[in-house]
Length: 186
Image 1: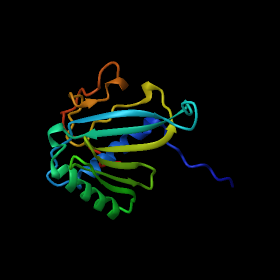
Image 2: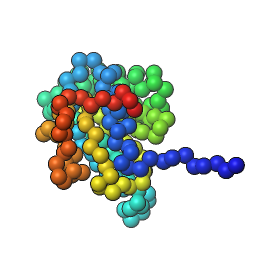
Image 3: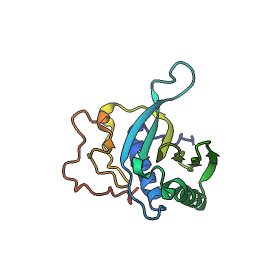
Image 4: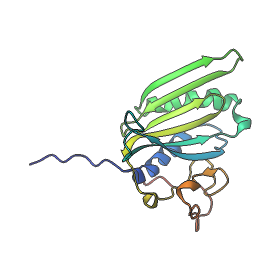
C-alpha cells in the first residue's frame, strides 16, 4: 500500500475558499458598513530571481471606503472583534501589534493562520481592510480562473469589484441579482 500525497489546490481552486474566508470574517463585525473595493493579486513564489514561474501566491484585498479609515469602529473595534473570533475559531493568531505614530494615529495588524494554510490579515494603517493570502499554489491558466462574487458588500461587477484583469471579456455577472454570494456550501 502506498501513501498518496494529499491534493494541493491550484490557483483556480483557491478563490472560492478565500472569498468564503472573507464572508466568514465579516460575520464577526458588528454594524458592518460594507467594503468599498476588492482586488485580486498574484505574488511571486520561491526565492531568488522572481521565484518559480509555475507557482503563485494569491492575495485578495478588501478595503473600506476612505471616509471610514479614521472611524474607531473599523480601526479599533473590528481589530479586536476579529482577533477574538479568530482565537475562538482556533486559528493561530501570529501577529497582533499596535504602533502609535507621532501624528497620534494608531496602526494595528492582526494576522491569523488557518489550518488550511490561508492567512487572514486585518490591517489598520493609512488604509483599513482585510487581506487573505494563500501561500504558494500551482499557477492556473487565465481561462481556468472562474469569477467568484465578492463578499462584504462589494457589488458583483460594480465599480469596487476590481478583478477585471482576470476577465478581459468582462466580469461575468449575467444572471446575478447583484446581491451577496452564497458561500454556505464551502
